[in-house]
Length: 298
Image (cartoon, rainbow, N blue to C red; front, side, top):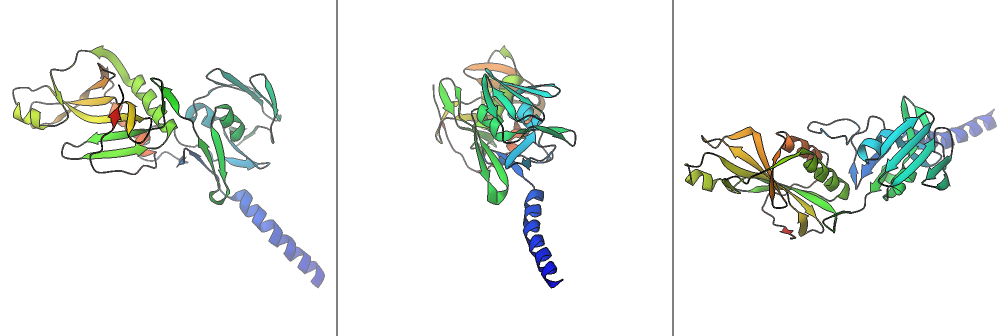
């Protein structure tokens, strides 16, 4: 009996760490920014998880929604086949099968895609690397990090972005050291950009001109700038958002904005600030409360 109890105790000591490891929550990060498991206040982006990543056969699996809505792949589902299109690449997986295709290349997965809790799970390393991303497993943090590559804008590699808030007497600067985040913000600006318009007669980066020139009621104040960086000091593009001020008490009109971008002026959707700020909310940024200039390449 004593020998039996010793054996059982040894088995429990072995099983307990395995169960703890299996039950541990796994986080997903992109460029080091952890994807939240629920929508936090101010996050109006698709950058959140409805279901956590899972470990199977030493591979991390994520809901296929991560591939479509976060990484930007076009996913179509024809049970049991999962078809993912990303740029010029097509990826084919099958639920319950370890055989997958990256274009014409046949690949054997460490474990097959599966359905659980109403979600279809796919191996993130296989998909992310097919998307030209690097994947890092941080065992101590139980975290899988997808490191995205710089993307090209005007012939230059964009490595990150800066969200600049002009508060007249000072500035708030939100650096985003992520090609992915920069790309999401740039695409959002393009999506919210309206028709090209004539440049406003009165606009500037400081309220002083407006205060002194009270004869000019339609003054556009530069409220935000979005720097798309190729390194820590230089930007390849810097779209500026100008906010119309009323002709009394410098009160902003909440419905009228203009976008100055690449030498042209555009109408923009009224909620441009809110939608772009959503990407600031989800970033693990360091707010800098001082003026910082960036060289914008011609």
